[in-house]
Image (cartoon, rainbow, N blue to C red):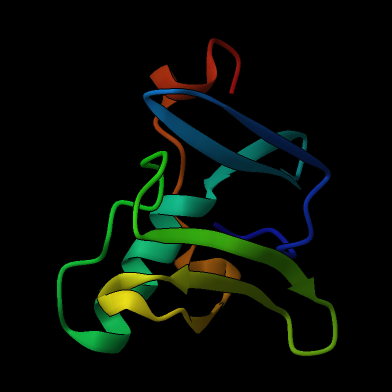
Length: 112
């Protein structure tokens, strides 16, 4: 993606089977869609070299706790709260806009 990373529109939705978090970013005369959970999972794999947890799973041991755009550093900051092994720890991930995972077109509907 070649946007500035700052979202123009944010969408969150889910039910008892899963959840999704989307950032829509303007680019030229259209919008790109970033899948925040998939972006975090990719950053996790890069950082730890292991399979990432399914962050879209409802009630899982690993949940996205905080998502924020760092204007100064130009990074998306994602905090994952992990409650595995009977203790809670936070994993902080920083992702540049060029590393955002795009939404699949069927995930966001026609026109995106």
